[in-house]
Each structure stands twice: as C-alpha cells, then as structure tokens.
Amino acid sequence: MAEENSAAEALESMHISHPGTDNAGAAGQEKEKELNQATFFHCVEAQNAKTLQILTRTRQVDVNAVNQEGLTGLHIAVSQYDKTRNTDIVKILLEVGADINKKAADKAADKFLNIVRVSDSKHGKEETAKIKVNGMTPLLLALELKSSLYVKGMEYRHWDAMLSVLAAATIKQASNADVHAATQEAEHTASLAALQQGWAAVFDSGAHELVDLRAEGKDIPALKQIVMHSSKRWKREIESQDSTARSSLTRGGLLLEVKEASYTVIQHLVRYLYSGLGDDEFVKTRGADVFLAAYRYEIPDVCQVLEKKLDITPDNWIKVLSVAIVAGSSLLTLRVAQSIKHLLDKRLSFSHIRRPSFSYMELPPHQPFGKAENESAENLRKIEESSRD
Figure 1 (cartoon, helix red, strand yellow):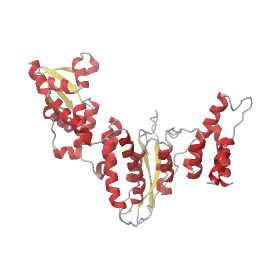
Figure 2 (cartoon, one colour; figure 1 turned 45 degrees about the horizontal axis):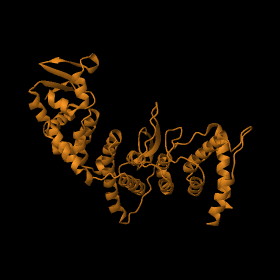
Figure 3 (cartoon, rainbow, N blue to C red; figure 1 turned 90 degrees about the horizontal axis):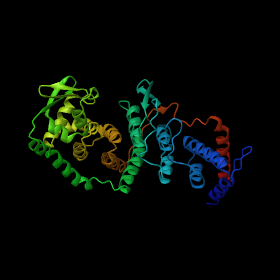
Figure 4 (spheres, rainbow, N blue to C red; figure 1 turned 180 degrees about the vertical axis):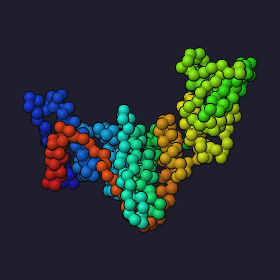
C-alpha cells in the first residue's frame, strides 16, 4: 500500500513544462492531458497493469478514447490476448469505466489487424490473415480473432477466459441499461399484432394493387398496402415518383429494386409481412439475414419479432452479433453474450488442459505517438520509477 501511495504521489507531483507556457494555463493543461492519454495507450500496449491502475486513478485520461488506429484500450488489449493469455488489462479497463460496447472508430479507410497463424499444424506452415476491425466491439473482435486463428486439429480454448470476461461485462452493462429478454415479451406481442394489422389497412383502403419486389432478377409480388403499412423505406419509394426511387409501372403496380438482400431473404421477409410468422428452419439458418433486411428496409415490427425468435448458437455468434451491432440491437447483443457466458461457465467449471495455440500476433495495433513519443516514454519511465520507490 505504501508503495502504491508513493507512486500515486509521484504522479500527482509530476508537471510538464513548455517554453512560454504555465502548467496552470489552458494550453499547459491540454498538453498534459494529451501526454497522459498517450501514456495510457502505452501502458495498455506494454501490458503494464500496475502503472495503468495508478494512471487511471490519478490522472485525467479517457479510457474510451481511440488511438490513431481507431482502437480503444479494450480493443488493443483484446488484440494482444493470443500472445499474453492475460485478462488483467481488460479487467482494469472495465473497472474504471471502459465501454464494452464501444465500436472501433469508423475511418474513411478500412483498418485491419494482421494475424500470422500456423496453417498446417503438422508441418508448422504459416500464413497471414487480415481482420477488418471497423465498427467492431471488443467482444466481436475477440470472437473474430479466435475464429481467424483457428486451425483444424488445434485447441483454442485459451480464448474462453477472455470471452467470459467480455460476455459478463456485456451482460452487466445491459442490466444497468435495463435491457432484459424477459421484459421484451410485451413488445414482441405488440409487433405481431402490428404486422397482422396490415390486413386491416388493405381492407380499409379498398385497394388491392400489387407491388413487385425484385431481388436478384426475380419478382416477389405483394400487396401494395401491406408493403407500405410495414416498411417506412418502401413506403417512401412507392410514394415517390422520381427516378431516384428506381420504380416503374408494371402490371398495374410498382416495381421496386431490392439490392441489399437475396431473393430468398426478401421472400421470407414478405412472408412475415403477411402473417407475422416465418419458416422455422429458414429462421434457424438465415434468420440473421432476414433481421438485417428488416432493419435496412425499416420494418421495426419484424426486427422485434426476430430479436426474440433468433436461435443463438456458437455457430452463429459472430454473425448475429455483427448484425446486432449494425442494427443497434441491445437485446440481440445481450442474447449473444448470455449464450457465450452460459457455454463458457459450463466449460470453466471443469478442468481443461490448455494446449499452445501455435499462433501469435504480428504488428499489433499501437499508438503512433509522433512528436509526443519522447515525452510519453519519459512520462511512462517516471511513473514506473515512482512505483518502484
């Protein structure tokens, strides 16, 4: 305790001076804030847990900030896990308020992590893989890394510890935000009722015009009033008569080009519009695609039905979580995290022999310090020295 107190006091007493600048002034404070932020990323990359704890307690740092690679501290710590096999940094960041659902910043250019793995466990052959990280949460990044590093015949259960920590944090944040699967039952029932009310709209209108939804060159005829009642986007396109709507008259109805989903997905989506029900087998395999199409074409009632209905399994964790992130579905995110935690809790309740993964990270993401590199390194050195006093 005395060692930690002396380190904290040393941090508090440190000042950064610049020519013509008083540390008490706004410019000096901003410079010190930038330096502390750079030091924060340095600590995460160096897996310096002790100094990171002191830094986050005694200095002003944003634990949810992104570095020039677009990654938060959580993303960086997760990306290093295959080498470190250590969850300490992630736990510290979560304890001090890191957002488990924060996405890697979307940049104009795609950002990738370079992964070097063994492609042939027998002969030790290596290959390079890339993971696009734009828009990923730490949990999705962990799932993608584990999947990308997988080689047939090799064990990757060392990722269970990290996935368990991230899933538990996701569940906790959802609980704090009052997102619970059980509380969604009323919304689910209301959504089914809303879909079925589409028929009332047809009857009340007295109109039975058709609209053709064309996907992959094939047409799916549907009642215009049903489509307009259910989809805000299609309603706007039907009502619009200009060329940007890409619509034309055809057999007394309208033709709408659907380019963001396959023919079979749109076919099952239309089935939901008519009945509020889908084919169970199709939903098991392609339900996430139908959900994404419903989100893109602004059909919230189908989204709410599928949020409850989708079957979450280890085989579709990545796909469902990816769709949940795109659509901003807190409920689907929670359900994926619960599925992960449930499975891993059962695994971790037994003793498992952890085999080496024979994989490692090359060129892990880092904070490009630029001109602040020397100052940041010096700041980190002082922090580490004070912690040893």
